[in-house]
Image (cartoon, rainbow, N blue to C red):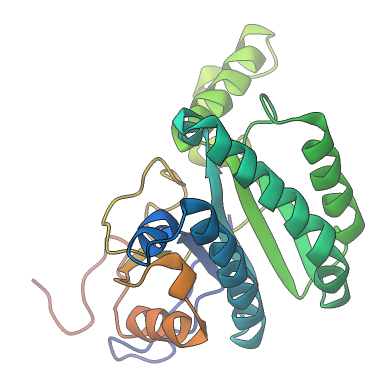
Length: 252
């Protein structure tokens, strides 16, 4: 795991900009409902917000952007809505892949491959392979992702190594556990943003956000733009990250 951002001087509230921003993109349905529109249009406007977020991340020199695209719990939604979300993912890759590659974006996916149709998985795999050497921005797409399942899977991998005699239980460390997660090789998020005013993690990056700063925005995801991104980063930079230590201005 890469080290977190450190303060740029000795004063609280002077953090360097975040290197890794994770976003829970919430509020597409409510955005549509308040305008008397079908939920599908809310999701389509949400894709436009993803494009804005990627452009803003590059401009703001964020090096990792993780977006919660489709939760493993989202399979509970109506089949028509699921089909629309899958179609949007396909169209996003087909339409945007060339531009993302041209702009130096490396695409990674975290989440389970099960239940995802083969055509979509092929598109995702092709995008990952094409962009693997890009280094301007790593766009991590959490798709069919649930953090509890990810952690259970990592524990299972280590347990299998113990059972095979390849690993002693005393050798199971935080670092080994982190390396067994889907996010192996990706630094933990410095900042987590959630839109729509909701204040919960919804089974997203539970391990990785142990020391992340959380910023909850009232705007719905389709309204998220560079100004909202900059406001979240400004809030992040106003904080003091102590990681269990003492404040620089207090011994309390």
